[in-house]
Length: 448
Image (cartoon, rainbow, N blue to C red):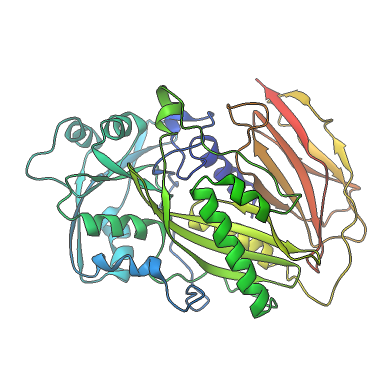
């Protein structure tokens, strides 16, 4: 995964949810542990999905999550959407292409359903949101910014999308509580996060993990994701590897302001399923989807889980508990392409971190570089892991992010740029056989 993609994922986290959805330009640069339904916006609509593998169902050969979309087989849904969104410095608009791009995507999965977009200029949509809709009431709306979204959520007028859309547009998907077609509206939010028939976006190659280990790592992954959604961290941590990064849960007692808005998400998990599992006898990777519902939220999240077995059984080494499906696939495919093998059993040597020193305080510009010595023999990859500090206290961290760093270099050391205000970082080395070593953590603070 390229570092730009990792930073995009990190930016999502910094601006909203520990529990799920994030990213709104109105709160750029602030770190909140929960949000509901915020999506990001691309420079242009994605070019489309590339499917090179057969469908991957849940372990039991079926998918209850896609079964939950059955309300989209027949019926009608009215969706209010803005025609354009602001790009760049906000001086010009770009068209969303709802009917020419988005609708054909939907029709591929549900050709008999009438998905009706009422496309409005942004100013008219804002006015419509400010007043109580009349008899011409929509089922769903796409709200373009926090200024419009916050009053709707605070007044309990809408159900917010829990999770992140795979169509990366900036804004908030909501269901109006008076929606005439509630079942279809809920199914639509699930479809925004997850396609009807999931297929990996790449051809998965690392499949030497045996059936017994596959069942074990899937069960552990589902348990960890369920515990995360339920905020049962006492149950979560025993399944984690001793070296796994610890992270904090949301802070529900925040009293006011944006911190309160982004921390009132409480969701109970309903369906939790594995949709992709690969790896070898030492390192495994699982993509999990989970649906959930709370007083103000409904939807689905995706989680990426990495597990390792050092001889004493499988433990969760890393979990990215929430993220848009395309970015999680980007991360997982980067690991799969390393080609882990069972017939190589070398141990990864210890990693020596060079700088900056622990507790360093450095200027934000120019971006400082984290440096470590390369190891011999050369690993399959290095992994740069970083966590951002949350405002709840010294030891409060959001879930960490990973960036794969190529070991191919003629220099004696490797570098990674760091551009976050306050956080901590460390480096992994992973061998071709799937063994992992990790450096110590180092904290850093960047100042303007």
